[in-house]
Length: 602
Image 1 (cartoon, rainbow, N blue to C red):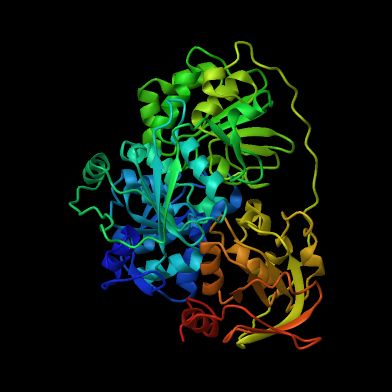
Image 2 (image 1 turned 60 degrees about the horizontal axis):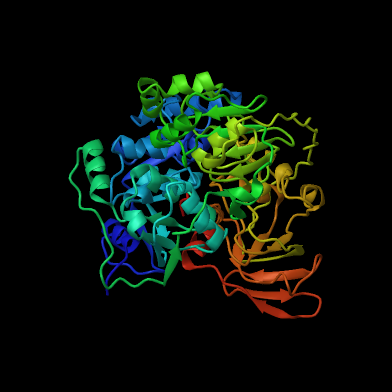
């Protein structure tokens, strides 16, 4: 039986043929930790008296808070620097840019290799036909110390894009079209391979844009078969010879999906949900307060050039703030050399040093209460980029909107910009009671049910990114569900042993470990969901926090007392003895649970 790209890469890195559903240890070629999560990786390694397996394959990338402008981030960065000096790990410091882009451009990664990072968009490596995964602090610490990590081989879907769109359509519009079709969980747990004439001609920048939003569809990764240009670029960057990986002719795909993009028009994602996509034309006249261009999705030189072509000999509309952040320092320097920075500044834009920018708390690109922002980022979850409303669009649409003062496409820029007034912000109270940690080691739990009948609860709803610098688990509980409307007071009402029952794709989004640990802090007994975000599921398993897959929200109600057996998945309703079934722990999950965590030695 032939293999898909992901199956071949994993087979090559575990030493045996694999198929979907197999759980194997994968050798990791490139091991990254960012300033977000990096200090916790160090903490995990040092507290468990572990070593670094191979410093030449191990790197810190400080991209969330370039400059260390937040005191806690600055402290975490220094913790990482001191650790690097002791171990020989290389640091790509605050002046370098986004870690996944550095990995590609510096030749650390190449087609067919494996990479892990504390970045939930590490699957951006699919752009060059490599395996990249975002993982939590414990996973990364394990990979740093042992050079490998366990992984379940995902099934693969094949997506064929039919036709070619007009020149107005960008790779961002194409990936928004995919997101509109698949939604937040349409590719949950799958790898995807992209094909079609449009894909074959796509440059590295465009491939990065599309690959970077796999996470927003729940996908493990979106893989591009490497073109000759991609192979040549990676060989030049890495100085290595390698064999690019392609699917076999008889590879077995879970599904083959054809999508016609010939009539595609510029698209935009409405605030709150990346998958809520409409045509830009439907929003013409919507005023904007600010525009952000950058992120791992649209921070490449080609994105900067597209913005410069729109801004040349024009001005940003009065009252609109345009913030531009290249993804790496090398791209920033190229913008300087090619005269793009001069165009940006003459137009009235703010240009910042390279990094993740608006996707990270406190960085350039955040917005205030009621502020309307057009962003080239990959997420617009409520509160993710600030307290305002964030629309996701292409660099061209973003630049056109900045000049016009309202949302518009590049072919409909207004001759006279719309003038508007900035809306005043409102204050919020984020105070919470602090609950203590509870540790449960028995293979069952009994507790009171909380029904939260919502799909796609993302990690910003669970544990907002403004609290990411918190590393003390005892401080985390009071922030649980602090950004989930209707459940903000959950920490005040929750009791030790309570069991959360919820919908699909719980924990979508970021790789933040705090979104698991906040429930451990509160003493929550377990979470039962119809499905979990891929990274969240790993983080919970590795933290020995009980999560189980099953649909119980339609059969139970708030306050029901239930007993859940992790070994067989049996759920008993105490009041009447009714029995339900959920998916029991796998052998790996049970073994980690009994040990008390991935990094706890038996």
